[in-house]
Length: 322
Image (cartoon, rainbow, N blue to C red; front, side, top):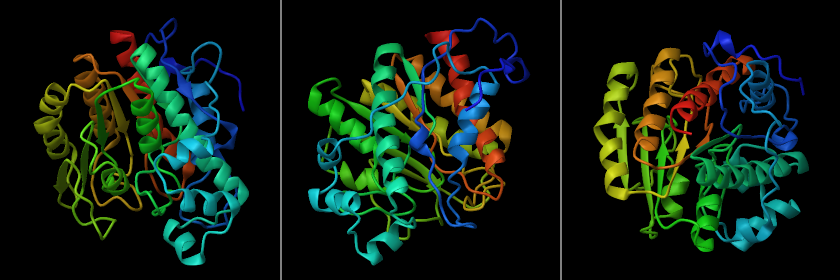
């Protein structure tokens, strides 16, 4: 991993001397996949390097999480599923549904990312905002994984904090282009968790869950219409739910250049979206734990640039509200 070079002025004028929010990263966020695999596995390490290069990592470096324990995972996922993943005995059909080979390094990555989102949430509760360099595996349900998602990191973190009594009300704001179906399934009967998902109407998954609030958007929805849809609902939700914590899935697959997206946000649109979500929540006193969600394409360094939008906007928001 590179050392910081403090070039954040290129993205954030006057960033030198800024107070920066904590960022969570683990070396195990990387794994080896077959050449040409659709899942952009190296984007996580590229993102970490980019954040260091831009001077967006606070003095002391990244916060390194502990991998999620069996007990934490089993509080959300069935023990049978957790055991099969960890022991490498998941049947081939279930593995194909996930879309990843469940090699030891892929399983380590899933556990590390899940632990990372829990640490991100704890840091957000103590400081107002924190971001992971992974997370947002929202297709994983209680007894299966799907769509490149092995364990549902946001659900595991939310359940742990609820069980510990650290929070009483949670709002999940899922702006990945795909519905947060696994999260909605998991918390369907949990009144303390409100799931809000904005997604492309014709995108994966084919079998939809019912979130507490779903907003479906037509193909090629651009910046202004997308942001209007978010703005129509988010302020009222924060006021009504009064969350002790917001989990924000800032997937960049709504981008116009995304391989799996179907929507048409520009780079500026992503920045406006993230800034709006963070400002709306923080101005109402709701801490935010940010995870990066989906983003797909042939160039993982380009994807890392898009994902860094969350962390850049978090730095600005932290300067205003931290």
